[in-house]
Length: 99
Image (cartoon, rainbow, N blue to C red; front, side, top):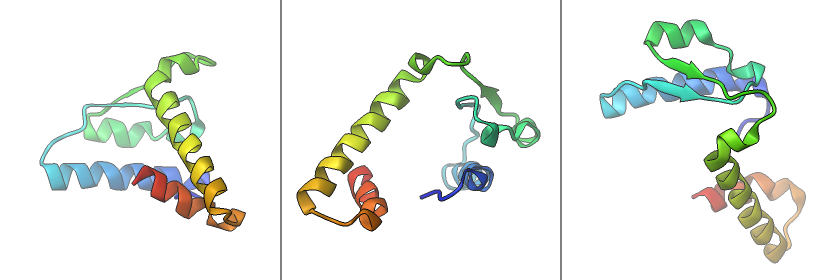
C-alpha cells in the first residue's frame, strides 16, 4: 500500500524492472491519469515506453480502471462492515479484497 503519492515513482520503476526480469518482456505503453506523481518521462524515454495521458477531467477514458477500483472499494466496505473491524485494519481488508 502506498502511504504517500511520493512513493509512486519508486514503485513504478520497481514494477517495470520486475516485469522485464521475471517475464523477459518489455512494457511498451503505460497509461496513467494526469497526476504529477506519474511525470517520470525521462525514465519512460530511457526504457522506450510510451506514456499516455487521457484528456483532463475525463474519468470515462479510464473506464476499466474506474470500474475495478469501485468494485474493490465495494468489496472492501462490505468485508470491513461485516467483520466489524476498526478503521486501522482498512489496509488489510483492501489487500484481502484484491487477493
